[in-house]
Image (cartoon, rainbow, N blue to C red):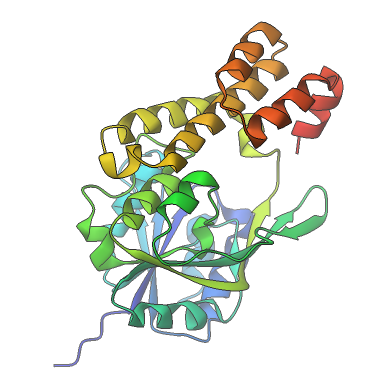
Length: 300
């Protein structure tokens, strides 16, 4: 009997996402690669999201209503449990894909050592009416743990994970994380699996408000502290110099946060704790910037 399971399961989590939902779904339906399913996880939306989703009438679109509202990364895990594909892709309702995204990325899995793939993407700022390419440098491939820890570069909207690789992890997305969940899962994948990368822009990420790190900077800092403490027991991560760079980045984030709160004493303590490098030099320059200007620059 022929296997009619979809090759790609597209995880689409939604909570009151009616504004851009239609374009997100159309960008999947218009894919040049057609062997997919959408796992649409409705996290108890109170808008027209369900009505918009069901209006497409495509059998590949699977609707699931959550029993209770859960944090985003817990919801991602619940949606994945419903998937049937060999590969897991992710598209939030604010974003959309280029027509050839799956066609370009899926062949990279012909290499059995590749457990996850990504591509470049465009960031589109709705309020400022401008856009820019996420990465102006060549996106790494192969074993990329150090690169991920040094300077995270994967956009979730471009990420596709081999289901076998996902299942090999001790756990999926960490439900305790709301900001750093992508870094967590891709770093753990990178310890045993290679990354395949496409340099082209294959997706568009919308920003339609203040940057999340500005709105929830303290949450980001708390999650980074939690994650660093959790990873510290893994010698495969703890022993890397890039892990210490991440700790420096935490100090830098705390430094910025304290400055924005006009707590220069705490900011200076974080500055002292940084090792000598680009972050420390940048911090020294920032110390000379008037607070009003710093707040203006960081409100991006």
